[in-house]
Image (cartoon, rainbow, N blue to C red; front, side, top):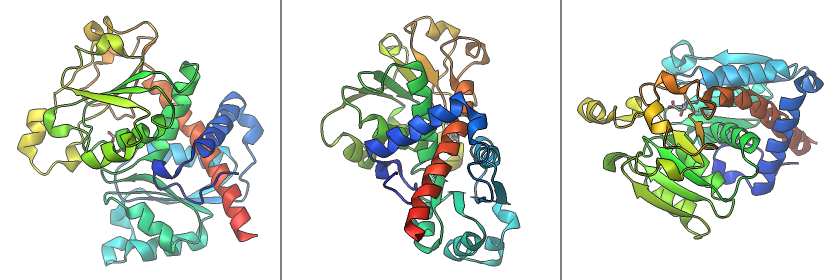
Length: 312
Ligand code: NCD
């Protein structure tokens, strides 16, 4: 049984929780039909106050494949928040209908706030530029299927490390495993925030370096995690325009990469990976999407189980 009742932040996961979810995700991946009635009669609420394709559909598919049902909205404009209802009240209401809620919101800390009034488990499907823990579960299930283990890797994270919530969540979890080295590749203005560095690297078991150029480090990487420049989080359009094409991973750059380097991306991709890279066997970002659904199936089951225990 996992130790958490909600998944709000990847910092809440213990290593044991993580491995339990990943093990179940792998079992589901190998034999999805064996799990097709595990959530019969249960309802997932999806509250998406911010745009999403993959995460919302992945959660919905996950619940449907477990035999459960889904209620919710994908556009805050059709919810009572337009009438002035607070997030706390919306969540409290939906938790009377649903057994578990996945929510995305533009404000940092929104999922945490929601968990205070909800009567069911809350899953953070992205809160502003802060955290995106289920993308991390997706990334870890993907990595564990391509690499022997989760330690001893040189991991390059490239792009918008300031606003990229997927990076913040992934760094925390990968730093639980020893001997990983992180190469943080970004423009000066989009460097990893100091508060994340403090939380992730405080104990000194992993090390990191910050660089500007992807070319310079390409041949060292075991894992390359590309990210989109997060247009919607910029305060200045001029700054976004200046930085949006900071990186382009193309066939030529891939020539310098190790034979067993894998390239991940949470998607959506804009211009940071050329489509010519998609056919490279080391590009696993579309395979990652499927792992995302299986790991969300695992998470839903684990949280329903942990919540059952709370109610009994
Ligand atoms: C990511 C997100 O929403 O943070 N997308 C996703 O959920 N797969 C990454 C992004 O939008 O760039």
